[in-house]
Each structure stands twice: as C-alpha cells, then as structure tokens.
Image (cartoon, rainbow, N blue to C red; front, side):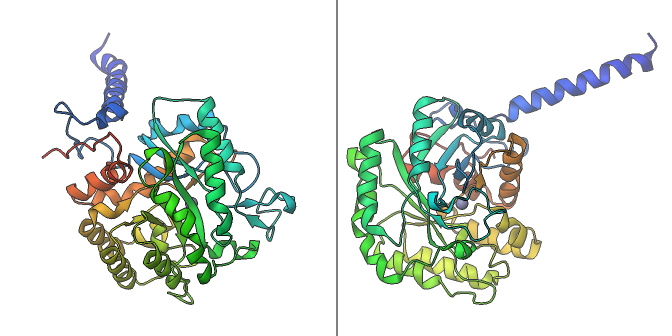
Amino acid sequence: MKIHKLRAVLLPMVMALTAACQSTLSERHLTQFKPGAEQACYDRDTQPYTFVVDAHAHFRPFGGEAVPYPELIGYFQPAGVLFVNAFGIGQMFSAQSGCQRFSVCPTGEIKPTIRNDIINASNALLHPNTDVHLTLSMSFADLSEPQYVAQKMALLDDEFGPAFTWMGEVNLVKQALFDHSHRATPPQRIDDWAPFMARLRAPEGGRAPMPLSIHADIGSDQAPTKYLHLMESVLARYPENPIVWVHMGLSREQTKLDPQLHIAILSRLLDVYPNLMLDISWRVLYEAYFRHAAIREQYVAFFNRYPKRILTGSDFVAAKGYQQRDYKREVEINSRINQYLNDEAFRYIALGQNYFDLMKLDYQAPEVCK
Ligand SMILES: [Zn+2]
C-alpha cells in the first residue's frame, strides 16, 4: 500500500480513537464526587464546563404527555449531569379547563396541582437508578391558598415515605401566567404560610431542612421593581428557611433590567438573609443578559463575590417530543457562564459543592487542578 493510502486509512482511525478516549476522559460518574484522599482534581482545560447539578428540571409539562420517565432519566448522565431535582411543574392546565397545550388554549386556566408530584414519586419508585442522584421535589403548593399545603405535604410523606426533600418550583408571582388566571400572591397571605414553612424547616424523619424554590418576578421592563416587595416580605417573614430564588427573579417580561441595579438588589438581600440562594437556570438569562460580554462581566464578578450562594439548572420542561439533544443543549447554554468563573466559584457552582452543602449530601466537589 502506498504511504498516502495508508495515511488515508489510518488517520480517521486514529482520530476516532482519540475522540473516544477524550469522551471517556470527560465523562462524569458519581464516584468522582465521593469524598476521599483518592478523589482526582478537576482539570478545567480538558474537562467540561457544564454544570454537574441540575437543580431545576421539570419532569412534567404544563399539559399533555411528558417524556417517558425511563427515557428522561437516561438524558442526564450523558450530558454530564449527575444530580437532578425532579420538579413537577408549579402549575398545569386545570382538569376543568379541558386544555393540554398553550397553542390551543392561549387563556386556559392554569393551577397548582398535586398530580405531578404523585406521578414523579411513583416513577422514581418504579424505576430506581444508580447513575444519577435524584432529589424529589413537591411542586403542588399554591402560595395563594396556603391553608392546604401542610396537609398535602403530610399526605405525600404518608404515601411515599420521606422521599421528598425539596419544594418547588412554586409561584409567588409569574407574569407569564397572568393570561391563564394566575395572579400575584396577595402579600397578606404570606403570613399564613407559617405551618408549611415550619414543616419545611424541620421535616419529619430527621431530613435536612427542605429548600423552597420560588419563582418571583422582580418586575417587568415597564415597571422594573414592581413585585420585589413580595419576595422581600417572604424573606423578612421566614429568614430561617432555605429559599432559592429561581432565575434570580428575571423573566421574559424583564430582559432589560440594569445589571448594576439587579446586582445591588441581590447583594443586599444575600447579605441580610444568609439562607437565601439564587438559581441561575433558564436560557432567558443567557439570551438577555450573559450573552453580552459587558453584562456578563458584571455577573461573573458578582458570582465570584458570592460563590457559595448560587445554584445551577436547566429549566428543561420534559414535554413529550423533546429529546436527549434538546436537554444537552439547555445544559450547555445554561453553563456557558461557568467558563468565566474563577476556580473557587467554579467548584462551588458548576461542580456542585453548594448543592451538596445545602442538601447535606455525602458528596464532594473535586478540587480544581492547579
Ligand atoms: Zn422552572
């Protein structure tokens, strides 16, 4: 065989082999997050910048069918995600509305429901897995009707044992659903959360306090801080509860908030309330904010200043029809900001140390290699 022919045969083989080696090298497994002297350091030059914790994944859609659970569970590990919060969704088309899709029901009524939580917990029982660490989250709570929340928590605990260790995402105010009969939670109702907030702080069975992920729009582009007082009331009333403010209060209704003002608000609240954390999930944050270098720099500096207060997530909604590549894309887009973090922030945020600390899990983020 002539030399150039040999090269033509061998080169693709060598390249395929190299690619295969690189992909196994960069593959993540739970064992890499076990504490111990033999834990290898994390090389940011050769290993992925994508987050290892998806603290914001909706296993259930607003209506219609979901990606079948056994299929969905298989999406995470290949995407480098090993720790997942299984949210239902804070609200679904009500049974009475007869609706399943936004496209056919632009104003169909949407309400919190316990259906998703029962389905998720049943699926987790039916399909145990060892590739990912799953945190079941109760998503049913209607913050405007708090009188039933503690009772329903007890019902889920009775049915599933102490399987649920998180609550959310629940809606304090979500303007995106105003066309669907959702309203901002009346401020006077927040006092009535006391029984369920107490149960979250001290769940039965010796579980760690259950974090509460709250969707609370800060405002809109027309009225930048219109709803901020609601989240402030919650924090002032329940400073001992671990609360996760999802999307840092941003939304599609607010894509032009001045980063300096936003960061000033968040810094002030993080300083006053040590149990407050922020979740930086949702591609809107990338599209409207992090994508722009001048804005991104401000947020990176902010995250580096508060490395222990930030959680990662995709905000993927597992509606039937979505596939593994769709999930992977959400993980990648929501992880781009991680590339710019300093090593300490990268370890706490992207490698999951904040999540392990919050949940008191027996896992540990590897040190970043020097
Ligand atoms: Zn969400």
